[in-house]
Image (tube, rainbow, N blue to C red; front, side, top):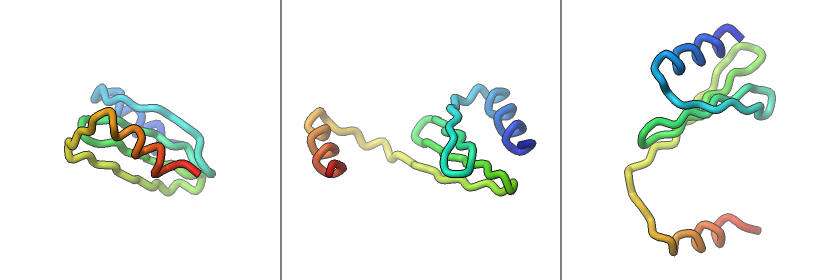
Length: 74
């Protein structure tokens, strides 16, 4: 819990947007910064896992909506 609180305090100090969720057996802090999104998971046994999603700035038009829905639906 100490690591989680310290991380949240640091995000707030730096004015970085975050959101908290419960996922699996962890508390996940989702962080949004320009060009990246981080998922930082804090587990009860005190280990931390981080996954980063990085954008290279490629933008898509409205037509991409159908591609997304087609690619990721049952």
